[in-house]
Amino acid sequence: QVQLVESGGGLVQPGGSLRLSCAASGSIFSVNAMGWYRQAPGKERELVAHITSGGSTNYADSVKGRFTISRDNAKNTVYLQMNSLKLEDTAVYYCNANMLVSGPWRPLVSWGQGTQVTVSS
Image (cartoon, rainbow, N blue to C red; front, side, top):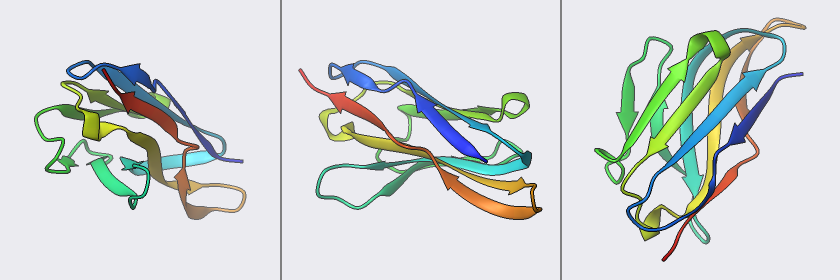
Protein backbone atom coordinates (compact mmCIF):
# COMPACT_ATOMS: atom_id res chain seq x y z
CA GLN A 1 0.00 0.00 0.00
CA VAL A 2 1.31 3.41 -0.99
CA GLN A 3 0.43 6.57 0.85
CA LEU A 4 1.38 10.22 1.06
CA VAL A 5 1.40 11.77 4.51
CA GLU A 6 1.43 15.56 4.86
CA SER A 7 2.36 17.68 7.84
CA GLY A 8 3.13 21.26 8.73
CA GLY A 9 -0.13 23.11 8.24
CA GLY A 10 -1.57 25.47 10.81
CA LEU A 11 -2.61 29.00 11.67
CA VAL A 12 -0.28 31.89 10.87
CA GLN A 13 -0.55 35.64 10.72
CA PRO A 14 -0.18 37.54 7.44
CA GLY A 15 3.48 37.89 6.57
CA GLY A 16 4.37 34.74 8.44
CA SER A 17 5.88 31.48 7.25
CA LEU A 18 5.04 27.79 7.25
CA ARG A 19 6.78 24.72 5.90
CA LEU A 20 4.77 21.80 4.60
CA SER A 21 6.17 18.29 4.22
CA CYS A 22 4.83 15.28 2.36
CA ALA A 23 6.40 11.84 2.61
CA ALA A 24 5.61 8.97 0.29
CA SER A 25 5.84 5.45 1.69
CA GLY A 26 5.05 1.90 0.66
CA SER A 27 6.08 -0.33 -2.23
CA ILE A 28 7.62 2.47 -4.27
CA PHE A 29 10.19 1.87 -6.98
CA SER A 30 10.58 5.48 -8.03
CA VAL A 31 8.95 8.85 -7.48
CA ASN A 32 8.83 11.12 -10.49
CA ALA A 33 7.15 14.51 -10.47
CA MET A 34 5.73 15.80 -7.21
CA GLY A 35 3.58 18.80 -6.54
CA TRP A 36 1.51 20.84 -4.16
CA TYR A 37 -2.05 21.88 -4.87
CA ARG A 38 -4.52 23.86 -2.82
CA GLN A 39 -8.25 24.26 -2.59
CA ALA A 40 -9.93 27.20 -0.93
CA PRO A 41 -13.61 27.09 0.11
CA GLY A 42 -15.86 27.42 -2.91
CA LYS A 43 -12.97 27.24 -5.35
CA GLU A 44 -11.46 24.59 -7.55
CA ARG A 45 -8.23 22.84 -6.66
CA GLU A 46 -5.28 24.63 -8.21
CA LEU A 47 -1.62 23.87 -8.76
CA VAL A 48 0.69 25.75 -6.41
CA ALA A 49 4.10 24.33 -7.28
CA HIS A 50 5.59 21.39 -9.14
CA ILE A 51 9.01 19.73 -9.11
CA THR A 52 10.41 17.04 -11.37
CA SER A 53 12.66 14.20 -10.29
CA GLY A 54 15.57 16.22 -11.66
CA GLY A 55 14.68 19.28 -9.60
CA SER A 56 13.09 21.51 -12.22
CA THR A 57 10.36 23.64 -10.69
CA ASN A 58 7.42 25.76 -11.70
CA TYR A 59 5.04 27.87 -9.66
CA ALA A 60 1.64 29.49 -9.86
CA ASP A 61 2.01 33.20 -10.55
CA SER A 62 0.30 33.99 -7.26
CA VAL A 63 3.08 32.37 -5.20
CA LYS A 64 6.20 33.12 -7.24
CA GLY A 65 8.89 34.70 -5.10
CA ARG A 66 7.16 33.67 -1.88
CA PHE A 67 6.94 29.87 -1.99
CA THR A 68 9.74 27.38 -2.63
CA ILE A 69 9.25 23.72 -3.48
CA SER A 70 12.03 21.22 -2.86
CA ARG A 71 12.47 17.50 -2.45
CA ASP A 72 14.62 14.88 -0.82
CA ASN A 73 14.73 11.95 -3.21
CA ALA A 74 16.35 9.65 -0.66
CA LYS A 75 13.36 10.17 1.63
CA ASN A 76 10.69 10.36 -1.09
CA THR A 77 9.66 13.64 0.49
CA VAL A 78 8.58 16.96 -0.97
CA TYR A 79 8.53 20.26 0.90
CA LEU A 80 6.82 23.59 0.42
CA GLN A 81 8.37 26.57 2.17
CA MET A 82 5.78 29.34 2.31
CA ASN A 83 6.93 32.85 3.20
CA SER A 84 5.17 36.21 3.24
CA LEU A 85 1.84 34.45 3.58
CA LYS A 86 -1.28 36.33 2.60
CA LEU A 87 -4.92 35.97 3.59
CA GLU A 88 -5.67 34.54 0.15
CA ASP A 89 -3.24 31.67 0.73
CA THR A 90 -5.76 30.15 3.14
CA ALA A 91 -6.73 26.73 1.80
CA VAL A 92 -6.35 23.01 2.23
CA TYR A 93 -3.01 22.04 0.71
CA TYR A 94 -2.60 18.65 -0.96
CA CYS A 95 0.56 16.96 -2.14
CA ASN A 96 0.63 14.85 -5.26
CA ALA A 97 3.14 12.33 -6.55
CA ASN A 98 3.58 10.40 -9.77
CA MET A 99 5.22 7.10 -8.90
CA LEU A 100 6.18 3.69 -10.18
CA VAL A 101 5.10 1.12 -7.63
CA SER A 102 5.31 -2.65 -7.27
CA GLY A 103 2.85 -5.38 -6.44
CA PRO A 104 2.19 -5.43 -9.46
CA TRP A 105 4.45 -2.95 -11.25
CA ARG A 106 2.40 0.02 -12.41
CA PRO A 107 2.39 3.80 -12.55
CA LEU A 108 0.41 5.41 -9.76
CA VAL A 109 -0.71 8.95 -9.06
CA SER A 110 -1.41 9.50 -5.37
CA TRP A 111 -2.74 12.35 -3.28
CA GLY A 112 -2.16 13.21 0.33
CA GLN A 113 -5.04 13.69 2.75
CA GLY A 114 -4.64 17.46 2.82
CA THR A 115 -3.42 19.86 5.47
CA GLN A 116 -5.16 23.09 6.43
CA VAL A 117 -3.29 26.36 6.13
CA THR A 118 -5.07 29.36 7.62
CA VAL A 119 -3.68 32.86 7.31
CA SER A 120 -5.47 35.21 9.65
CA SER A 121 -4.78 38.21 11.86
